[in-house]
Length: 176
Image (tube, rainbow, N blue to C red):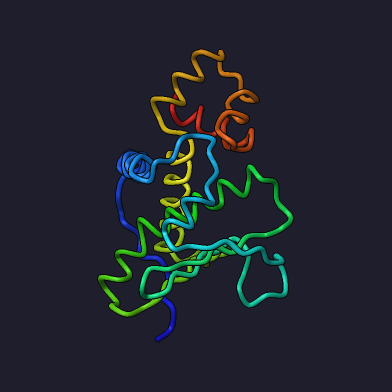
């Protein structure tokens, strides 16, 4: 059976945020902590690939029918970018794979970095995975409190949460 693409959850952004924070809490994730131990507990693995020339594209997740998964990463990006990518791929795993498993029992799922921009379902799934990643890594209440305490110091927030300054800026703007 061919691997299936993610099926969007159709949850609203605030619902995805709450779900991501709930998943992070259940997994015992603390903002800024390493993500690799979580992957191991979920029977997932991380592999680094070239952005070009590989059939397994970088910045993607491959989930087997039994729920084991591999996240493929580029070796050319920063650790902060990698953390966001890992959280993004976990978004596909938690939001979209259960829907694939329900609709197509026994199917695997592959979510890749590059989606057909005319495919509204795939664009939606990418948005949802981005929303998930932002809330997983930078939970609403804690991030807001740290932003207030630091007078919205983007560099401080970026370092504390282990995300790029760009990701911290976007999260701050989203929560303002």
